Amino acid sequence: MPSFETKNFGTISYKESSSIQFPWGLPGFEDRRLFLALNFEDTKPLVFLQSLEDPGLCFITMPVLAVDPRYQLRMSDEDLARLELPRQCQPQIGRDVVCLTILALQENGPTANLLAPVVVSIRNFKAIQAIVPDSDYSHEHRLLPQETAVCS
Amino acid sequence: MLMMSRREGETILIGDEIEIVIAHGGRTRVKVGIRAPRDMPVVAREVKLVQDQNRAAARAALLPGAVSGLMAHLQPSGNRRP
Image 1 (cartoon, chains in turn blue, brown):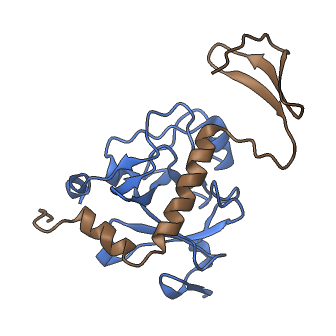
Image 2 (image 1 turned 180 degrees about the vertical axis):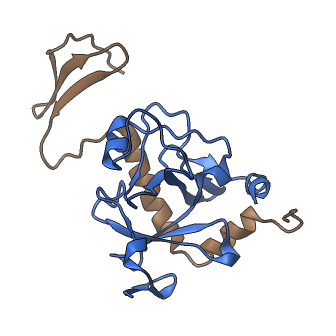
């Protein structure tokens, strides 16, 4: 089982089959292609997207439905094709894809990027950060404590 | 902001080095061609927003106390969790 030294979590061992491939990287980190999704009992519902190429690169994320249970995922045809998902219908969160939102820590509290969720195909573990141009969602959605409490 | 009306195939010049061509005008979207120096980044505005947001998120994730701070925000004491 391969292992990797990380800045936040020390050395982690992982199954190669559980790594997530971002063939196009993420905006701002276009050359980072391989990540692991880590979660821990005492930091639920957080999901840590740890780079397997950069020990110091880790995004703190949350399932998008834990932030907004009514979240509507709308992916462009181009992004659907990139994940090898059918173009005719939008993927269903939980059935076709895992959908995470990257959290940012701002001075006046944490925010979630709902404009550009990270979408992982359950079938092939390929992922992209899907930006929807005409989205009504904010890239700085204020994270409220009660939103998570409802879902827990 | 300077507003200009252009037809398909017409061009706008910005300085000497940037050329913008209205390649195709549709009902709800327009296709724009951009010629600019190679070292000049050209991205859609929302891509730039997400780039900046990702860089800030990655920096903040490394700060000591980032995770505990987030957890404290998500689960303040007295919160009713099952």
